Amino acid sequence: MNIAILNIKGEDTGRKAKLNDKVFKIEPNDHAIYLDVKQYQANQRQGTHKAKERAEIKGSTRKVKRQKGTGTARMGSLKSPVLRGGGRVFGPRPRDYSFKINKKVKVLARKSALSYKAKEKELAVIEDFTFEEPKTKSYLELLKNLSVEGKKTLMVLPQADKNVVLSGRNIPKTYITLASNLNTYDILNADKLILCEGSIEIIENILN
Image (cartoon, rainbow, N blue to C red; front, side, top):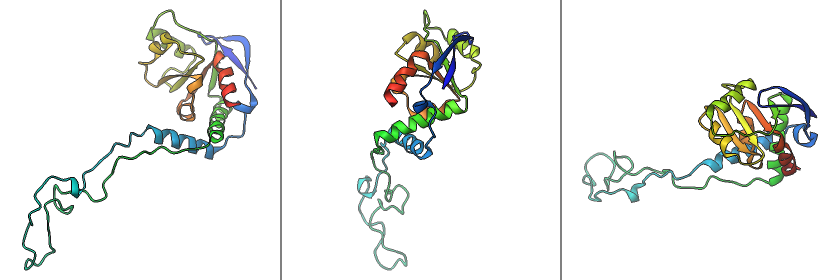
């Protein structure tokens, strides 16, 4: 499939970018997307949550009351979970939430996400560009020219560009990534996916 290439002023350059149908026009697999997004979110979790159980609580082990004659159950410690300030029963412990999925599933998920964006016309291609100096105003002007101001956008660069990253990092709902780091979650999380011309070849090489 072909898509028009725009310049940073939002004007059609008259050139077309050829997108590989095996990457941008496949039948999306929703289950692969689900697995990849689930893994991505699980990998973001620190897993450092911890609650103290009764063995870890500081406190006296002196019997709270006499064992017999009270008419209630026996109680042997102030650290009991039924008392205020006592240990927690089966509290959370540090753990690793990450899990493995096959590489082919991850590739299928990214292809599916890109195909959804292309199908729903939420994908734009612009010429490779840079800024002479880091300037938020320049990036805002670019978004305005592309009619995506105020929308959640993901700009995909072919290679690291300090001036572009510094220009866009303080703008709400604006995300910038490299073609080599593109993942399913970021693609689907954006209202508009903006690909720099040079990033298309990198993405297709990685996914094919």
